Amino acid sequence: MKRTIALLSSGLLPLGLAIAGCAAPAADNTAAEPAPGAAQSAAAPAADAKPTYRVLSDAVAGMSEAQRKAVLKAAVPPPPDSMPVPIKPTLVITTNKGPITIELDGKAAPLHVKSFVYLAGLKFFNGTTFHRYVPDFVIQGGDPLTRDEATRGVGGTGGPGYQIPREVNNLTHEQFAVAAARSSDPDSAGSQFYITLKDVHFLDPNYTVFGKVTKGQDVVLKLRQDDFMTSVELKPEPGKANAKP
Image 1 (cartoon, rainbow, N blue to C red):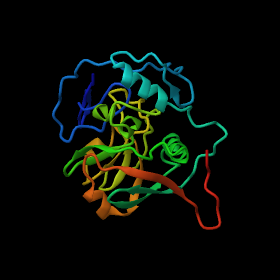
Image 2: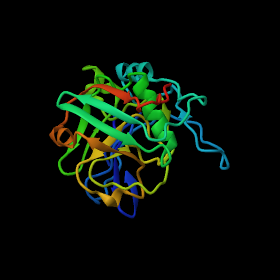
Image 3: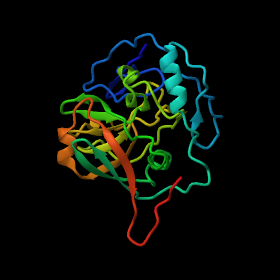
Image 4: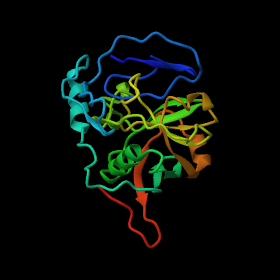
């Protein structure tokens, strides 16, 4: 069972996302009623707590047994505190349509960037599909449930087993921005991400942009639903070792 979330430029309303995971926003500013659904629960941080990752419980309501097992099997611990935040990491997303190079901004969105590099180091994205394509809007992927045919039909509902709070910054949704998908909870991003296919600045106040495509823009524009990632790998900086989990 999925729940959906829609987005108005002035605020967030529930349109296209799901139980244990996240979705990108609606392609327009039309509100939609949320469908019934259940989310994994996470402990709420104290009001004065430093923003950090939230670990989800294993009580996943509203899922089939196969989906529940797949969600729990894909779960990993959050990035360790000892892992430094990469400042300007470059990663190569190898897809069936070709390679895409992205540069992330660890100063603008440290928790998102650290998580993405951490998951890439675990080969978490390998074999996942792009489960959502909206022409002239976004291509979205990163859900571990899309690795297996048995759970591919519920793509958009999975995640890494922890959530990332929204990080407000000055990065915007220009064409080829890399941003975090989430549910109606602003602090519920996980492993799912999207790449914008055009400028979509009405999303800027509500979703965390944490990087951009620097090479392979032509590949991004060729991607469609069910295309897939064979690997996501950190590209070492010349004369410098990138942080690894």
